[in-house]
Amino acid sequence: MLTFNWNIEAMSPSQFKIADYIEKNLQQVLLSTEQEVADAVKVSIASVSRFWRTVGYKNMKEFKSSMVSQLQASPAGKMKKGISMVENTQAFPYHTLTSSTHHLYKTIEQYEEEVFQKAIQAMVSAKSIYLYCPGPSLGLGELMKYRMSRYGIDIRILNKAGSEILEDVIHFTKEDALIVFGFIRLLKEAQVLLDYAKQIGYKTIIITDQLVSGFSTKADLVLFASRGDIREFHSMIGPTFLIENIILAVGAKNEKESVQRLERISELRGRYGHLLPR
Image (cartoon, rainbow, N blue to C red; front, side, top):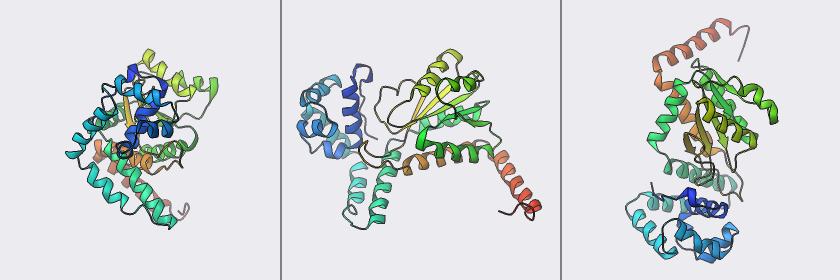
């Protein structure tokens, strides 16, 4: 995986956008001018010029040189070439398949084994797991709840909004874990949930499509899943891939008990199948 080492604390909101755009479109950036980057992110060229110095480079040329050096030792370039070979088809399903492959690749490109395992351990160790999954991420939360409940895990979706969410927050303990889906931005409710963790001490995990953001330091752990550029259709292929791997990894932590519970479901289906057909 490429190393960017952004100095997040020194960044302005515009520089967060620039950094996120670069990480998601590095190959294109390496062939772009500062003006083209500015146009893509919708900031001034002066903002792009100041950005390089903020993140530790003299200018864009030095940044490009650093990235090229890393890419030469990385399989990323070869993988990207393989994907780009099928980009020009006019058939819609093939175009979607290409896009999905790209999102899966970008998700696994940013995968960090240590962070992922810490997140799994936090979930397995938690007394209760709370999911904040607003909007389109609700389906991902429902998938996690449905699958992980089978393991005997107490996992709950936070459905309330506004001040009503505090009715659930009062039940949080330091033995719990909170998973926040923060795509594009964090809603006010998510900000409250993450802030309250500082007082209570429960573990917090953000699942996001932002590689660089102002909220990446607000949680104990951050997991990335690609959904595409902010200006295009947001795919859930990457997040679903991540969630399915989380479900499998959690089950593997207590494999014997997990398998026993799943076998029990099969037994009950066999016993009551005539009354409760699938």
